[in-house]
Image (cartoon, rainbow, N blue to C red; front, top):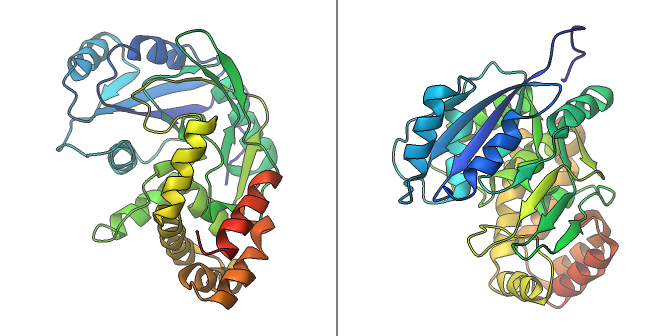
Length: 312
């Protein structure tokens, strides 16, 4: 559990930076991380088979910046999530807090300090936040993620971009333990989703902050963009129709059960059964629980419709 800090001693945050062909954005991102106020920052970077000079640039920076450590690659991961999973397993296990870092964003100077404060005040093992998306043409918009949390929202959505996450030592230790034990099993396609599931299913507190802490760069190479606009909606509907989203929910329900505490296990087992089955009765029972599955009110009635009609 997050603890109070000794007066005069800054909280220590290990930042896990996953890179792949991000050389053009990395200087601005890394500068914003190293300039964080009110915390001790240590960056652990792992490059995933870049071909644009990213790995070389990181090595050059690490030679002159003692707060940056490059973790040697043990082979191409194949995805951003897999790269972050390896970072969780390979980074030192004794740091006070951990944070995920993408290669192309810009962090608000008080991002880590404000989230450490919230973690301590609320006894939260995970903190995330809204973000401000921006484009190369200067368009900016708020990406709102802080709708009230629901009982099982973690099965269908994450609490915001992983680049906003601050996690306690014990949460990352739980994730490391799960990853080490799940070597032969499929893992969720998004690393941030996994951490949210582990925390919530284990009965630990997660806080989603309304204050944006990340300038979220939008570009053609985004693995996961801001999820706004008609194009994004169409893409998400395609994933629903292809049963990708339901497949992830099934997987996450199994992950949740593997770490669930006694207070949550029975209800979670029932939810897993409803997600696994596709018969008419199960569909309508699950649709009736739509308010437990998504945070945003609009999304609740959309998922209820998709479940009841058999699309989801």
